[in-house]
Length: 85
Image (cartoon, rainbow, N blue to C red):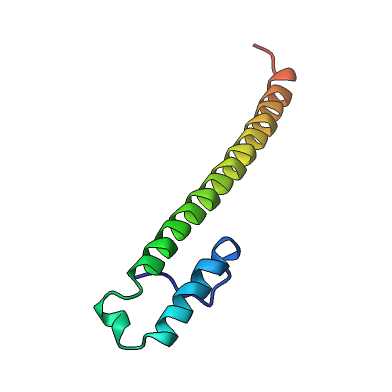
């Protein structure tokens, strides 16, 4: 199974279109494997898309963590400045 094809997949539009054409031109043969090559291409494209999005999200999360850590260090240093040891 694959995710819904109506959702935006900018990297995979040509492959999605090829599968839709195959399904519409071979309505019964699709059940016997006539569109397996197109389906395999979609699986590969979706896998690559998911890896790309996962990497973007991880980079974004790391950047946010670094910003938080920097702000936390500033707060800690401000709190320690006025205290007598």
